[in-house]
Length: 51
Image (tube, rainbow, N blue to C red; front, side, top):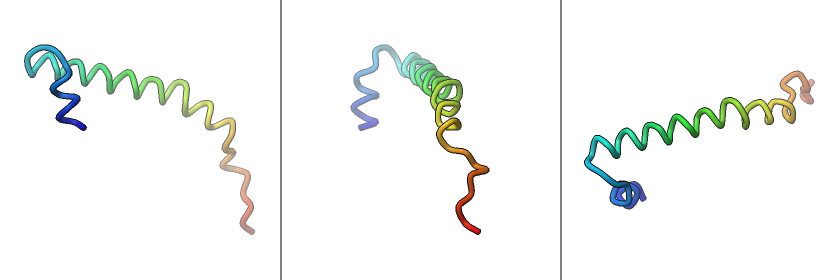
């Protein structure tokens, strides 16, 4: 899978690395600012069922 992704990306190796870093940064941004806050409203860590 990673080899196929590497072959699909355009440019020399350093352009591919920059593209992959931008994609990883965008994914992390989306997780930290959209997905994790949404999940925190669904999962309350203070709601403990074990006594």
